[in-house]
Length: 291
Image 1 (cartoon, rainbow, N blue to C red):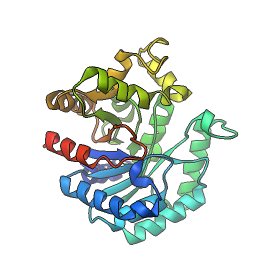
Image 2: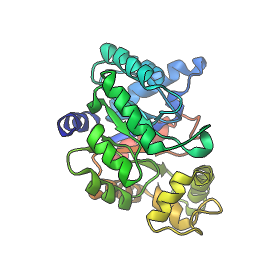
Image 3: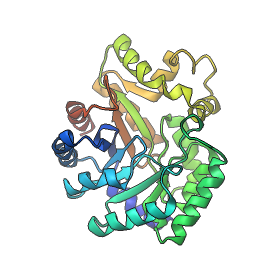
Image 4: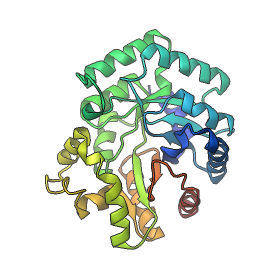
């Protein structure tokens, strides 16, 4: 996949924005979302990643409202969207907006899926079906945490989009992926230099993720302890998976992912309601501090 991944690396650039709010389907906020993605493009972000079990349908309005920025799903659940339908949707979007849509796929989490089973094998079957339907492997990426899914990302996709990870995970993932594949981790940012307030904002958002075993297991593999992943997360865990502080600190924390081997970092601005907000002033501040 290295040739296709190289093209994708160039398209998405070093920085993108990860947002649940941009995937929302509330018609009353359609114009606001269109204005927001057009501004993100002007600010220089290379990609928008749509959280919350997103699909091609969520990407289309943003693609129409912009000219160059790449829009990807992060992620589309393989349990809720059949492979044949996903391939057909991709082909339709690709025809209208060539080279600008990336299908990000993931296996979600056991507590969120009825009849959750054999996630890795099911993902292999899913990408087999995508291949059969003619969906190009170079335009899909996988939400991979463990080594097996990372290898699948390398061999059957353009690369990986790990969520809720650290630079240490990025270094391990790069070793597994090799140099060719795209590695685009998500990273959360709280634009607040007050430690008590920033950690409180981060902890309130992290709490629900600590109920999902895939993330907890990954934290334990990275050397965190059971104490770190209980009670909303220890300060040690919060400080590892969120950037907060002054501009120099946040810039340094983001740079650590690139230094560890990331090609692109998908930045999620966390405020009081990150699942519903469009933190446009936060995105402007990020763009300014990143230069």
